[in-house]
Length: 354
Image (cartoon, rainbow, N blue to C red):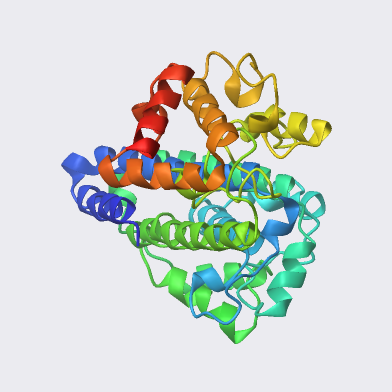
């Protein structure tokens, strides 16, 4: 489990346990949830439709054995049911917003009853953007419910009547892999529900989603040229686990994400000119497209690397980057190559010839 999120979650439980620190704990809980939701936002905005129904760990035991689409569905159906049907005793966001039709889901349950190929087929039916909008609405509505709770309500427990309400809602499958949820939720007080499902449950599934998308990116990059069109090395990029390369559909390079089709202008230009990369273009030094936009602090270092590839080739390029990373601890090449493309080229040449 991510140590930062885990420690924050533990701190939240301590703070919520005392009236004097209760509000501080609730504010920290909202921060944790916002941080985790940002991870989901980046995944939804960054990956192609097929990524959401792929199951790269089909035989694994754990949350990462699911799909990205299923994970989002599962997190927020559980939260919607618990927050609205159980705690607030009002209509779920799912029903009030007509999200079953918008998302295209064949079920209204949490999905616990699904397994294996059923999860894949279910995931293929979901429209991801409406699913994301549903998740966001649930998150925001739950945040309001949480912020309106008083310390005195933390020990509120649930009865057989509450169990009956949940069962009658039809939102929990009678399947043995799902129906246990009713007793689990009703066996906790509100403070316990804040831990599961409003925080720890998120952490476990978001971590699983990160693991899934990392594997999908890794798979996408197999056999693909690790040099980006602009001249940056995917093998040395700090976004390596997030990005599947600008030469695949799993491209989440910083500039690609600025465009609706997730295609950086450098990549588009190279494909239109039918060249391997910007390092084959005679306009390289004067180019201001995409990653080379003057306002981008990585433009000069990217050009320096493209110029080096043009002069010495990709094998020498990788050797130099390996040496630079062995010698210095840096995330972005501009930290080493600076803000002048010609000076950056000299630094690389000195490393190569030295």
